[in-house]
Image (cartoon, rainbow, N blue to C red; front, side, top):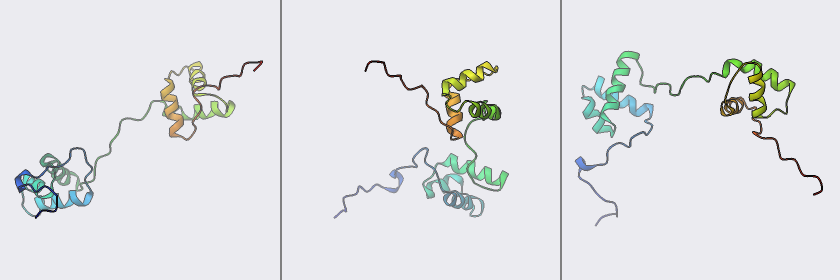
Length: 141
């Protein structure tokens, strides 16, 4: 009698899910199995349900850097960041300024940024603005 779950032979077990985050503990156990236990990276990957290339990369990283922590991810800093003080000065002088208005004020000072860049800056710094002014009501309504 089965419990309703499908059983597969060991060599047909599903492999690692690509792109999933692996805990430091699991990374450490896999690297320790290779470095201290003398196991191959491929064998350790199979044992822990990981990708072989990931285990190989972690072993190399451990030998070169002494840790298996994930590397920093992300791109470069935004080119608008160095203008932080100028932006804050403009917003202090004109607090009701919209994103488009701030973009235009920066352009008047010789700085060219897209509205989405300005909006992202404001959002990162907790200074969000409306992108457009509210529509004015027509007279007589």
